[in-house]
Length: 207
Image 1 (cartoon, rainbow, N blue to C red):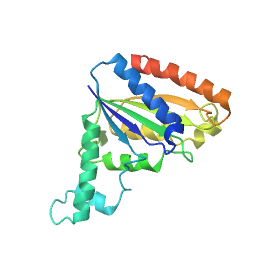
Image 2 (cartoon, rainbow, N blue to C red):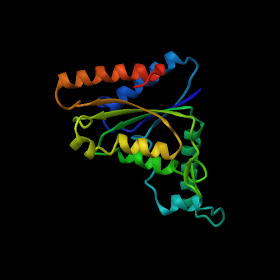
Image 3 (cartoon, rainbow, N blue to C red):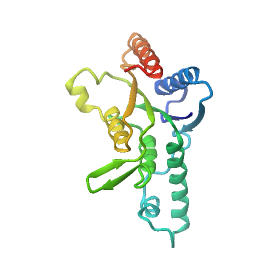
């Protein structure tokens, strides 16, 4: 079994999402000995944002590419191959300005490849990356899950659920810690709840 561990927080040792992904991966390895883990730190090694040079080779053009287009295509190919090879993907996704970090979005733009992770058919889009389990470590400074107003402002978990579903992945679980900027007591409670959730997720129970 192969597990891809992805972090995207810019907060280093102070990051809640990084702490959660580390706990999730450790719990998964305890439950599934022999799991091969690859690690990708998007805050340190983020792909460049999507450009025409990055998109050109994906339109089917294989000849006459510029050196920049060749280099950009190599980055995208490495990332999508790594993603497709994984059986389990653990994603650290902090909540930045009502959405996900731009580094994580840049990674998604690179793996969203027609013919690799999805395709368009006469009946509409079809995901090609099914059969994986995705576990998202979701961290939020405030509380957004318990009110209609908060849910309307949230474009983090909802976006990741949508894009993974577009890729054909139906097993997407969220380990959430929210309200972590609302005082130490709130943060401790959020982390306890996240710990309980991750144990259920790793054991295969419904989160």
